[in-house]
Amino acid sequence: MKKLLGTTALVAAAFATAPAMAADKIKMKVGGYFVGAIAAVFDADLGAGGATDERTIRFAREAEVHFKGSTTLDNGVEVGVKFELEGGDDQSAGFDNLDEAYIWVEGAFGEFQFGDQDGVGDQMPIVAPSPFLEHFANDTDLDPIGGVFDGGINTVPDFSGDSTKIIYFTPRLAGFQAGLSFAPERSELSGDKQYSDAISGDDTYENIFEAGLTWEYGFNGVDLGASFVYVTAEDNGIGVNDVDDWALGASVGFAGFTVGGAYGEKESASIGGEEYKAWDIGVTYGTGPWTFGVEYAEANVDGAAGAADPVEDTAIIGGVAYSLGGGANVSLGYKYGEGEFRNREGSALFTEFGVKF
Image (cartoon, rainbow, N blue to C red; front, side, top):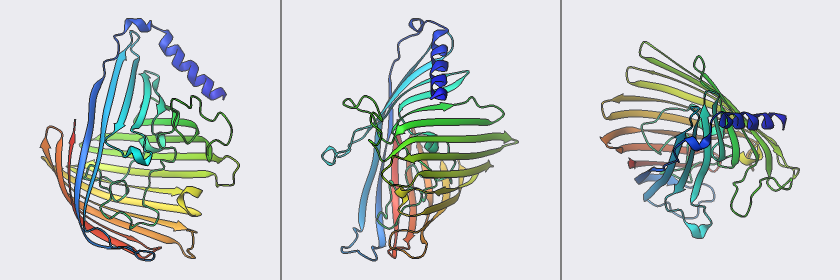
């Protein structure tokens, strides 16, 4: 609590050094993106428990509208706000259109963020590079062969999601930057819930702390990067496991090539097993408007429900992307994946088309 109060005092001091009224009011700008995809699924074996055939032709899309604005005070401190709206979520299914909503304060002291925003466990990790906008081996959010993986492959310890939290990033010094975030519980505030963690035990997990460190360095046309993040959360007393997740990543860029990867471990009830290990590696090559790339990812879960031996998921994805200019992109790719626990596998050829604005 003393550390949190000290953080609050630092932010207050930054504002107090100059009158806020001297700055112009924030003017909001509209941005966002739309990504659509069409996939032809060649094989998709549901394995054990599969009672129906998989659809051969599949459509997918991911879309958001962003409202973002900032103003600079007389003392040089920048104050900003951002809202991200999901594009067309099914409200009948109980989804919330508001994805993220937070304020930030940035100056020589670093940057503070407060609100519904991803923690440093999601903002800071380096993972394998990809030529695609939304299709990755290390993520199943937009997956042409969905339903194949037993537990999913993910080296990013984004345990807290968009839960309401406070986040701090240090200034980058000698290539290094550190980040810290804290959330009382894994939930988002709303109009009828004005304080989180009002009663201990409101959520399954509480006191979620995240810490991260990144390093960037460039010389003679070579760009190096590395990251480490750690996430911990406490069981609120109902008998679930405490969270103890971490991940490290690295990348190198040279002559149009980018090579990178990540490795992570998770220990929590949310992964469906005693211990989860995942890694990915990838390479991309960019020349003019073209980007080529391939990525491989693998996950291993010990003690998965009903499995005597470790369960393994694997995925490989590759293809080419072309920038049309003006924020428009189109790509063609192929993905193959296997899920060992239920003996599932699948592959698909897909096209991805997107616009950023």
